Length: 340
Image (cartoon, rainbow, N blue to C red):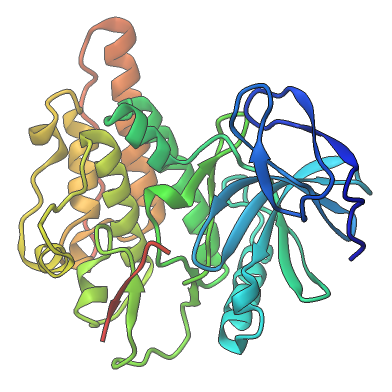
């Protein structure tokens, strides 16, 4: 790659204050320098084929995501650039590619869209739909408790997204607040299928269990089997956290958190936060039942329970009257953590 002239300047837009400022052309691509207007960090853009990486959005274990511009199609996208130190790790590269293939097979409004997976020189990267209006985790951090109507909307849409993944025989296995992003229209997008696996894949009972301990389903911890009901549990735990301001089971150590997932009874969300409606609290408690067979037995059932709670919430909000309770559905029947 040609090095910039030592005395040149480059005009870039600050992602924080939006001012256009000159930065030193001697900076290497992805190097950062303070904005002369607001003092926050500006990045020297990097070109990967037709994609110009302009500013950092987030960073994780596998790579860093950048707000980028597709100069061929004239649109803003997100580029996930794999960490250089992992590019020669065959297992890491395969996992990176598997994430791309898993997402690319799914077409749903609330699942992040994958455009391409490519390589230029030593750089491996994934190009996807931009969702840079923060995560559900950010909203919890900012507000502590997210409004119930917003939480229900997220739950309904992500449940629908997971149902689509299940139709394609895919489990996500890492549902958590930081893996639900929002685009500029406020639409939630499920991301990070790095731990996803096919429903018919053979399971090694002695293999390590990966996931996030605060939301992981008991049967995954116990390695007694995992299914879409495990993802349902994790989503319900995520929604619970959003409503009450803390994770479902709090403990000083990860091992104690994991043990609580198995043995400790869930305190209903409406008990922790009396502002949460009974219908919403009851739906989450059922979806987080310790025994998978006691949860909703389909995503449709879970989604309908959330939609019923949403309807009751709106009726109460606009009329000041309680809605008649709906008949219950019939019961049929990397942050990361490693075990092993």
